[in-house]
Length: 114
Image (cartoon, rainbow, N blue to C red; front, side, top):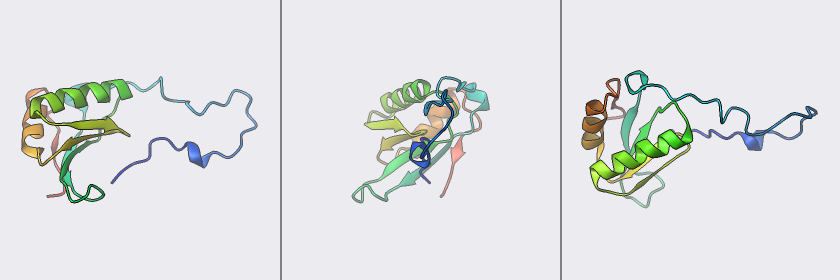
């Protein structure tokens, strides 16, 4: 379910003199919490058998994603990271994360995958 948001490896050559690989980075507008459709699920693949809770579906800037990730990590009292449009929290924290998201106004958030 990991999405590659930077398709820079797909570009080989451009004849456009104004071409830039960072085209839409600055124009990303963060949706309001009530408009976000976040999904929370548990993943153990590629993590040495350890569980991680994944929050995906965030629409907005990378800085806003990192700030949301930081707030979720603080609430859960555990480590994690925010990158590539996903927030990864250590351990099975799905219920805590969902509870916090609902309380903070992310009403369209729900569990996915089981």
